[in-house]
Image (cartoon, rainbow, N blue to C red; front, side, top):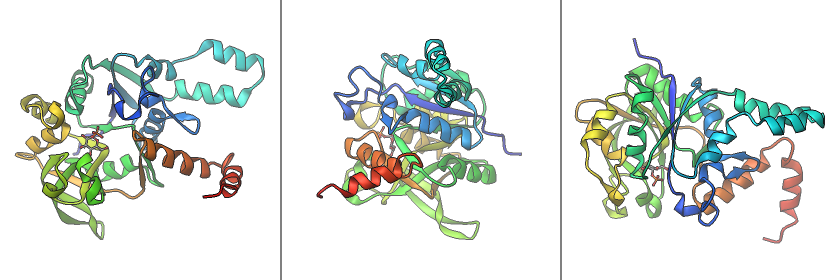
Length: 294
Ligand code: G1P
């Protein structure tokens, strides 16, 4: 029997240097796409995938994240007295949504290090990791797609996406063999090797790891035993490579559209597309865009 995945870890202690100056005094996870902070998209994806137990790895200057998911009595009182019931409900839904635990990463020593900070809270069970600056629009949530693979194989799965050669060195890149699954030949891969942020000419393929992972608890031992890698950081990709020595690791080319919302251009693209898809804003926003001379 495959053990159920109940917990999702959100590393959120990074410095957000790609988004300065907006992130100087504000966590990048709180940047709003239309009207919702980035991290809330990830948390909702997790809930819609069946995972309610959220662990957020925070750092210095990240208290806005805790406040966002907490109850705001003053605001609720104000909205209540003004009879703004829809807004009140939206504000309440956020704090009612989930059970969140927080753990601190005192220094930003890398993604692997951030995940390791969640070890005690995760315990000896499989878990998900979501990087909230990868925002994914999909009919079936990306994390749910990975969980379906996990439920079938009982093994580690990472999200994959094809990336053009000129951008590949920003990612973890896999060397992988396709595996037939559910009648499809080009979605699931068994990973042979992987490398974090290779030079374009050294990349083993055009398949990049995107910020959704289902990990087995043995990953913690792997993180513990690796040395700092790319950028002098403890990399999750290096830990996965270490895990590969005695555990299978799969990659799944998910269905859906991913935005790199941690990057200024990616963030703008996500903002435009999410606004266009909103029932309350889409039509008037489209009309506005069509008046622009482009
Ligand atoms: C992280 C991971 C990398 C992955 C990427 C996806 O890198 O280390 O393997 O491809 O997320 O967004 P970062 O973007 O934090 O540099």
